[in-house]
Length: 68
Image 1 (cartoon, rainbow, N blue to C red):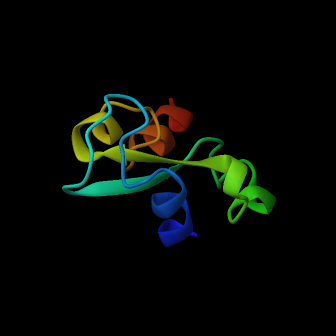
Image 2 (cartoon, rainbow, N blue to C red):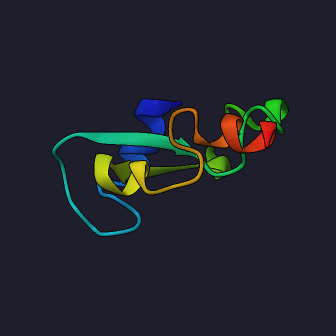
């Protein structure tokens, strides 16, 4: 899934447009909430590390917010 998302997006961040470098594949809809969409190509996008860190879904941000 990660490789397929990266290839589809031409290794380009879908927020800032950075091409190449260190990139991440991010689930648009959280796997914790939508496990059936975990491998759906329409539920993914390529992000650079900085843009990924700025999203609500990065790391433990989402899970910590759910506990509040």
